[in-house]
Length: 540
Image (cartoon, rainbow, N blue to C red):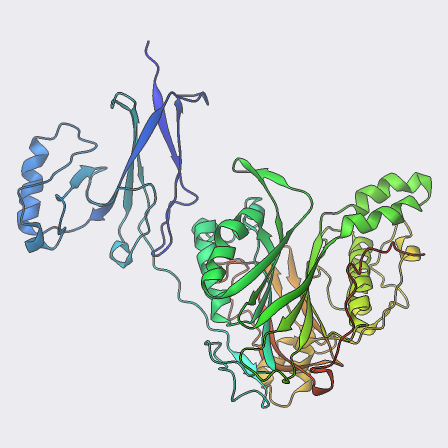
């Protein structure tokens, strides 16, 4: 008995979306086995379902159907005035019959991006494996459901306070920025590797595919017209192959810090991390710091009681990171005597685990420990990220109040880690969105999206397992001023859906603020920041 081959084809979803590339997974092997075949080549043909045909083409197809040699893949071509019928202009018309339908060829490469013409029609992919002798080894035919239209985006406008209203477009359309103002975005974009766990069954499968989500996320982020982007859960391969080159086309420089532990996915090791982008025509890097929280855990674990050290390794050795960069404004043709500002931007993603309030406090305290040294040089500080900490939690109170005098009822510290932490700091931090409640220029509709007691948004995360605020933009309130905020979302603007959804491609929502360096801090001679503010070991 001869060996039988099969072409296996798999799509992330069988529902195509207009404008979103279809890139199938294709593999050839022995039937019922994963043994690799000898050398082969793959040929592809994409077809669109034809619901109606011009009468002459319909008659031609019917005639050719009688002479079909392969009922599953009948190809028709030649003999037609193609320009007259508006079907093809240069190549032979290729029409096939199969699965009880008539199809017209629309592509011949491995990938295909459906167009507006494909909407409401099914697509058909024929994949053929051919050996070195040119002999067909196997054929696979895959038929999709009808192509759907890309959902219309929901616009999120800026609330521009009076001091800046005439300089920036509140609809986030790119406009010349005011010299002293800059716009900062923070967004946990949901790494693709976390969408396969079955946690998002409420979301249609086609809206969870990376091909769809990456385009939707990119379009959303670009619509915000930010000068600095702080993204979390950026998968390492997606940063390299998509985000970095796409943002580079639009004038952004990028830095990236991946988490310290990788997982094996799609034939390579990947993990997510923090990515910071900034307009390179406006800013230049002074110095960059990469913070790994697990390295800071080792000195603490060493001083724990011997019977707690193994548990200390398990609890504290987490792979979370922070990416900190000091940026300086470029001259951009200004007078040499004109004041230029320097800012420090910290981008972090704090540990999420359940029953890990001590771990989150440990990481936040250590982040601030280094930032406090930069703050002492007079440089304004911005902290963006997913803190995985609700308003009123111990990490949140530590950031805003500058100390944790007594722990909350939910705080759990089985190792006594708090005894090894400096639970106070001298930085003057505030959350940007608290300004919504302080301003008389903000309508009641927006204020209703805030928690009045916590002075934070009602939610920045809206998924099945949690609804609440986990994401923050914090700033040095003694050196920076908030001049605008991105409007918050509510249940109606989410189309009464949990996240992610076809409209919003992450389980978090983006936060964004306009900042201006206060005059007292603008153009001052800052002390040189330390080469590594996190180098010194934690003291008791």
